[in-house]
Length: 312
Image (cartoon, rainbow, N blue to C red):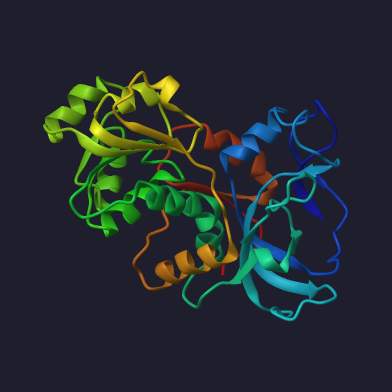
């Protein structure tokens, strides 16, 4: 089968033939229809992880996917051949991956795709939306909060803006002027600020009283912390801590994301109900999956998705 894979240490990621995997006990073999790109995939492609994560070559890239069950392993009762499913690979090692014609995954990582949700949407939700969900929960956002979302046009940010606004907060989103700012406003942001300018001045212009809570999904944590009022909170998805922001009058919390099939199922239900939009910046066929990696690094609004099979 075709897959976006790295053959050996030091080799580039390329679309190549690899062996078709087989579903083991407790696993499901999925014919992939769509898979999304995450920042982690770029780290793997750049070779940053070989010394810190176990791996077996060829290493197939991609964590999030959606498709159709092709076979089930021993002990799997929750899914049957033909079911439409979505999931994220959560194993600690590298080898299996989702940007491929087929992928095996533990049945505990999978959920059914609701009617009315496309495979492209389901694959794009994945880890990005779960990260946004966990970050918004950690911020404990309420209707009286003014919240700054950094990286608002990225894969995590486009979902965080919506989830924070849904809790009634006044959301300020970082975005370039023009189309990107228009999109984040449509998603629920009350205002958009250009992160390339003086961020403190830009935020003060739209929120003279400052912000109480900030989600750090991109950018300089010290610059973001500077706009948080005393007693406020900065939650970082990038590992920032208090020592990096130079303030002891706010709380800085780095969180780890804990993806589950239940969280993914809840998010997909929100998509099906029309309450959660899935912004997709660009799609690429599997044969051009290396272009998808390149596109991830450039300016974009939303997710980058590889369409492996005709869309459903």
